[in-house]
Image (cartoon, rainbow, N blue to C red; front, top):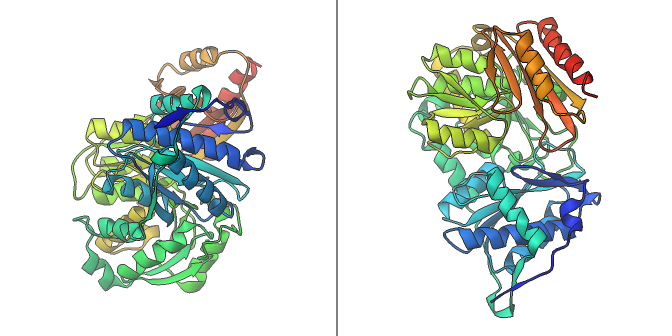
Length: 466
């Protein structure tokens, strides 16, 4: 029997929490507390089990220092609404997404703040299809927090069982992809450098590289969450990995974020080539084996378009957000997609960003090409991307959109997510953030000066609304 519980509005309205499409996040002890985690986890468990195909919820966490604490209270919260927990322990977000599908669960809950700094943590909510909740689903689920959560009585509480094989199944699924030539990759004995940044990647990437016959030099493999550097795998944070590639003579360097859905690359020259290249290079190899469109978001580099064109395909743009890309991939029948932050999605595996998948695809590309990664990259144009955050004005952004559209009558206009103006070799995207009181202005051009010029025009127009 389920009994309603009075709502606690402080967990709904606290401005220190960042509530987005995929979940809630905040700084631990400042907005994000055990009480908040319990209420949102309970609301999700009640909502998912009422809607889903079973009473099971898959639960896992990344390596963050606060992970074990929130893991314990989340498991109790799920049991308190009658959910049967399938606990996969320390894991990756894509592993958990796959486990939801494998267990035909009602949903999944991953305790991870992805690339955020060490003081952050978060809950990511996953539906029965292995995708993050859509905006409508997330709004409906959060409504329980406001309206009252239906807790179970003593005779209807959930149970917990442990699933220790989720990571092994994930690796098996990656290596079972028909165009991953395991024997061929193993014969190359690639020298690989890896930086796990003490995230959950230490529990999966070394095993994958071993299975693919690679010689690995690694740093920060401990899964204790004590990040030695900012954990987002962007070029400015990858100095240690670049040095490791140069000193070890590695043919490629890999870096993952704490929950291992994003993959960044360092070339054999010891240079971080930018996270947009992960999807671009993965697209290059997949289009040799599959025919169909590529889907990415509106803020991803044109290098993906170049790689797709070389493979005889086209790129379809979706609003920013993994679930938006995944849903568009499903509707368009895409053969590959993802985001320019290092997230690769392959429908044959699952509709979620997956860094272990990215590792396998990059090694497959290197095997097929028989040339260095830096040589492959040099065959394509290089672009400069400038990203700015600007305080959100009090007035609507429509005036900025209209002025920019009028100023550039020759541009291709996309209004799915803010405004994106595109040309054959450049673009600018202006969109309000869904989680912060800011406007993001992102531009790309063949030169930094060209990209900066587009950003400045957007900034100047936004200033008129202040």
